[in-house]
Image 1 (cartoon, rainbow, N blue to C red):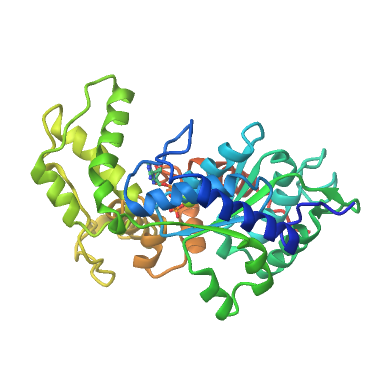
Image 2: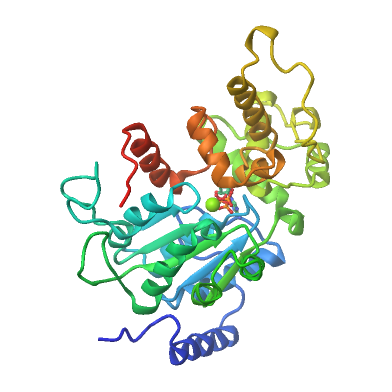
Amino acid sequence: MAAPHAAGDPTELERVLRERAQATHRRPAPEQPPALSSPIVGRSEPIRRLLDQIQRVASAPRTTVLISGESGTGKELVARAVHELSRPHGPFVAVNCAALTESLLEAELFGYEPGAFTGGSPKGHPGLIASAAGGTLLLDEIAELALPLQAKLLRVLQERTYRRVGGCADLAMDARIVASTNRDLSAQVDAGLFREDLFYRLNVLSLRTPPLRERLDDLALLARHFLTRFAAELSRPAASLSDQALARLRAHPWRGNVRELRNVLERAALFASGAAIQPEHLELAASEPEPDHVPECVLPLSDRSLRTLEQTLIRRVLADTGGNRSLAARILGINRATLYNKLRALGLDRATSPAVSGTRHANDLAARAIRDGKALVA
Ligand SMILES: Nc1ncnc2c1ncn2[C@@H]1O[C@H](COP(=O)(O)OP(=O)(O)OP(=O)(O)O)[C@@H](O)[C@H]1O
Ligand SMILES: [Mg+2]
C-alpha cells in the first residue's frame, strides 16, 4: 500500500505548504517551543524565525527534513527539538555518516541477516532504521555519505521500504528521516559529490541554524544559560559575566559557534572560581587560524616520532577550536573522515570528543568493530 504521506508526493507537499501558510496567519512567532528537554536559547530575529519554522516542521511528522548550518550552531539540538515536538513517544536515533566506513554504515542503517558478514553477530542486527521506528533517525553529516549508499538511501526515501543486508524481504520504514550537514549541499551536488535526486528528496523541508556571529544579541542570554548549567552540575552559585568580558565575547569571530562559546565559558567559570568572569579568564582562539605555523619546538628531542607529533598537533588544534572537528579538519588540511580515522588510530577519540553525544553510538560501534577486528565486509 502506498504511504499517503510519501515525502515527494506533490499533494503531500502542497498540504504541508498550505498548513505552513495557514500557520503563518494563525500564530505569532513563538518564543520557545514548549517543553524541550534541551532548550534552544535565544531571542534574536534569526532564532525566532528558526523556532517558528521548527514548530511548522513539527506539524508534518513524517516529512523529511534537512538541517544545514555551520559546525556548533545547534543542528543536533534542532533535530531533537523537531523530534520531541513531532514524534515524542518514539526513539531519537542519530548516526554520524562520516564516522563509519561504507560497509559498516550500510549494516548499521539497514541491519543485516544472520551470517551476512564474517564476524557479524550470529543473530543478525535489526539496524538503525528499525531502531528508530515510531521516532526519528538523524543522519548527521549527510554530505559524507558515499555515493553507493546515497543511491540506497534514495530508494528508501522513495519507497519507504528497505532491505537488511543479506535479506530479501522489503521492510516498511516507520521513522522520520532528518539529515544534517555543515556543508553547502547544493554546491556538493554541483561538484558531482552528492546526488541531485537525493538532495531534493531530503530537502522537502529545510531548516538553517544561524551562525553565532549573526545573532550576537543572544550572547548574554546564552552565557547565562551555560553558566547556570555548569553551576548546577557543580552545585555552586552561577558565575556572572563582567561587562568587559561580555564586550570581549562580542568582538570574537566565533568560528566554532555556540559549542566554542560553551567551552570558553566552562573554562572561564573554573578560572574565575566564584568571582565575576573578567576578560583575562577568557581563553579565546586566535582570530585567524595559522595552518602553516607549527611552533618550532613542540616536542622534546627524545620524542619526535610522527605519531607523537600528530597527536600533539591534533590535540592542540582541537583545543584551539573548542572541540570543533570540522574546523580542526580544515585547519589540518584533511577531511573530517580522515580526522575521525586519525583520532581513532591515535587513541584520541574519547579524550577529544566533548560534544558528540548523539552520534557516540555510531562512533562506539565503529571503534568496537575496529578493535575487535570485525571490519564488516560483504
Ligand atoms: N541555541 C542554542 N541554545 C542552547 N544551546 C545551544 C544552542 N545552539 C547550540 N547549542 C549547544 O552547542 C553545542 C553544539 O550544538 P550541536 O551539537 O547541536 O551543534 P551542531 O551544529 O550539530 O555541530 P556539528 O556540525 O559540529 O555537529 C551543544 O552543546 C548544544 O547544546
Ligand atoms: Mg552535529
